[in-house]
Length: 419
Image 1 (tube, rainbow, N blue to C red):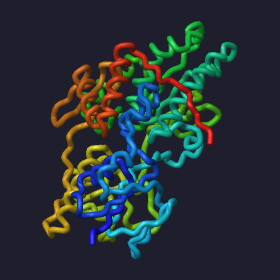
Image 2 (cartoon, rainbow, N blue to C red; image 1 turned 45 degrees about the vertical axis):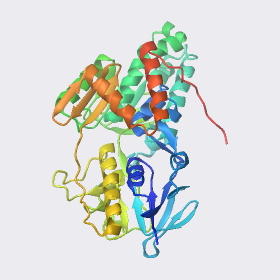
Image 3 (tube, rainbow, N blue to C red; image 1 turned 90 degrees about the vertical axis):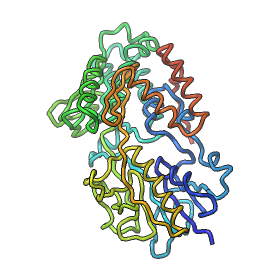
Image 4 (cartoon, rainbow, N blue to C red; image 1 turned 135 degrees about the vertical axis):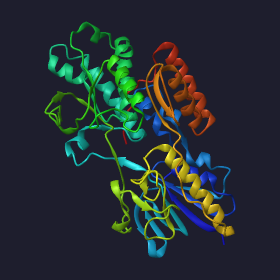
């Protein structure tokens, strides 16, 4: 009988596993809380109104129309029952021969309850739309605050916590919009003397910690030139009464705190606590098996593998790791029915990159570092071909061309559906 593989999570890791499994060997069920795959590196462009959600998303059921051996089920994990090979979802139950956990991460607020309740996170499509709506609402509100300069300054000031690629890209995009788009969209603000600032806060001594120093320095200088106030070696300690309290004692008054400061993996009821490592990531061996379980696997950001000599503290939680782990586990699953030897996972670092603004980016590829227009072109090309479907690529490229020529985009609508 054909064995059943249940894959929880349809991100980079899960979708690459599913797409690389051979037809006829297994019956595959992909489970996800959303009915669509989305491309996280471009979330910030949805959040700033330069792309629509459909540009970076694609429905799973459409994707699997011609693959009858793959089925999709929408739902979230409630409990795993390993001794029964059973998983309980919010939408029912499934039995499995092999279970693969590829749920990625969720936003880590480091126990800051006020921040969790009031800051805008940047982890999924819902967050991106919430940020777009919220920032636009604050700008609309600012056009009515001529007499109250303190409230006006708070409405126009934006604080971004987290100096990784997401924080850098949001800061750069908002800085460009402030100098061009906002002036055209909100002429009322051109007649006032108050101007809000953009702050980028990070606890590390430099931005883009995993990248080369040359790229870090280039990014720092470019953002400062664009008007971003960068505060390093500092973390957010609290946020209430429209005040961001920093660890260096500084207080920034603002209505807008964007949280891109960290992630953490989710835990699964039913699995032993001994199988969790740093950041609540599931500990796996070189073949992606979760510690203590022979038929439960974990790939992508939700797992940590400690036996790679080049990464003794675990692999970085980046897209390339998830992509490669999904393909490697698919290779091993394809070899299992034939009793062929399995391949241990070894991560091949292909580099990292971040876009700063128009014609500005940094890219570390192998031992080479690029910046400026060349890095910007590399970033555009890599992200364009990484989109899942040609329709996404065409619409995204069209939007990018329009925004590049006009230095603008007409997608800044405040849309809040009501149930």
